[in-house]
Image (cartoon, rainbow, N blue to C red; front, side, top):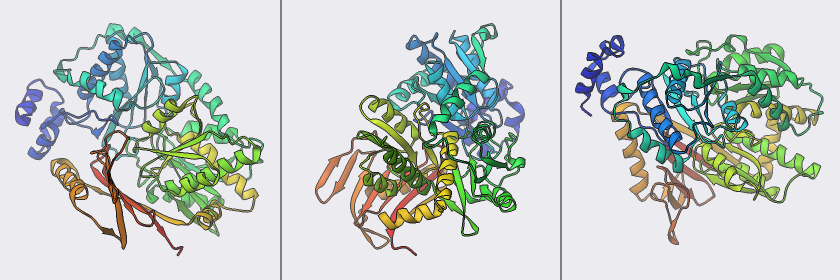
Length: 534
């Protein structure tokens, strides 16, 4: 795309003129050299003018393409549910999406205020809609927003659907020429309390032991996001002693009272830990802005200790499987889903209880899709990723920070009554299965040059003959883009969908993965290293 010509066209049409005039030459190129690409994870991008930024025009184009997809499935009457988070322009983008769909005569269920992403997933199923749209950029910095599409199962669309949706989006010739018929707004129905009540009722099913007396103190922060009302409502209803980080409870698109809106980042917990020390809390819970991820900090031997997503997942699995076994409700056909970058510690817990584990590509949509595939064939028990996402019950088909909050609180309560902290439980798991160090590192590489650098790094791992890493011998390389595994036995075919991911398997069951993020200008490295306890 000729970025100068396209910039001049926007300027001549007085579209976002004030923003356009503030751009440097480099920024002009970044905003106009290409169009935003709708990928398998939807769109997550910086807001601003131009076809390579998120604005009402790029929102309209993607929704126009999606509307044509809905029409092609004769699903106008089934409708589409739309939810949004606390970010800048989220409400506006949600309304623009609703108007485009309504213009096509498609029924729209639009939430009347911000809601968590997992509730959108639930609402699609509850309302028997054809699909859903959620406007969110999860835990990205404030300048970002995003756009994700869900199928009628309440699962974020997987490649067999997005490949078709993308073709419809690409068929929209000019994003500046999409018309909106305001008279068709009669097709938009606002939803809220009724769906909330149904969702909250289903959330009660997450508990294993509802009758537990509640003694623990919990500090909770929604990090200015959508989790405040549902998480607080449920934990209060269940009788927990809840203390909220009040300055982080109101919706704020700038996340002004937290150093990070990402519960994977220790900085996100600074104010929570201050409050926890004041009230002598047992557990700290933080959810990300769209409340699909959860991070925890626990009190242990007088100090507050962070748990990674992998560690939390292993603890939740140990609790769920042990309690089901004790009650005699652990099914013979039970299955747990995780991703190819999730630590093997949880897998060892499952093996102990005779529970099957299947790994998918990164992205919870693949877990949600596996639940659909195995429905009626195997019994779903738990789904999780290292990136702090968990799902316990499949009334949603996406990771759910509200479900996770309920279960984490119960697990902490149960083990406290057994005289243990969650760190004690984790150490018991290490003693039984071995100590694994799970590490996730990333490098931010923005812009055109960053994209080139990421491609170079991945190709280095893809094409170089790497024999040793950290003193461990490389025994196999799995390339999910080429769908091949190479080891001493030769080349075998990988059956998962194609993805730009390289996994190096080491001789002591350790492994390392490198992949570009699908949502941010980052390259990510995942390490699962078995070590001796320090």
